Length: 202
Image (cartoon, rainbow, N blue to C red; front, side, top):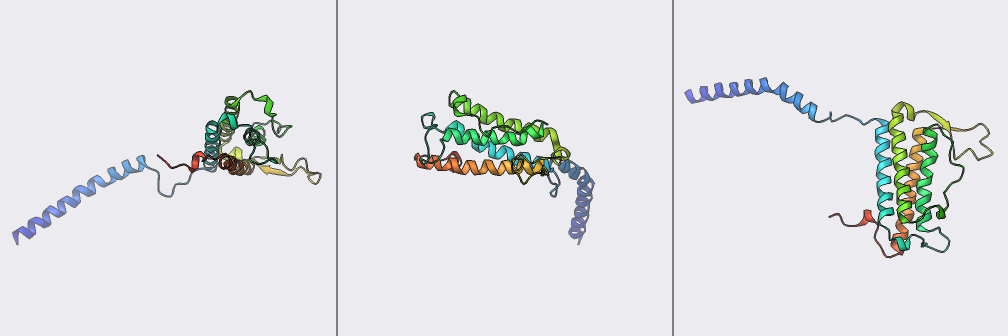
């Protein structure tokens, strides 16, 4: 009987000690990790996707053999270098407008503008860095700004200057980059190579 009472007293004491320390422990835990239902801001979510597809294309640009940069996947396609340049150039249809500038007047810079592989790699890196910087500086509020849709502007039916939110335009570019990634993967396979993302993780 005494041992039962002693156990009860000790158990109750332990509960009191835990109760006293629980609030402080809970506060510490809350500071260390976000609430389980916390949601990243819209611009942060966009930035994450922008940087992720940028990472994949930059990895390809750095990895692909320079002696194959001007090879084609098929006679009717552009070269690997041209497709990379195209992917990077498209980013400025978003970045220029986000920075209050005009959309590019030409779709892609000419291949001869880039001396070698390193120049193309630098261009791809810069195009994604510039876009990421624009997303960060605009934030959620700025990314909801309306701009004239650069892809509808040349359409005669767009006499009313159809507009698009910067966020939607950026997501369209992310999707375009994903399509370019898929195309460039074909170049890898035709050359008998494995794209960086498809290789076994070490």
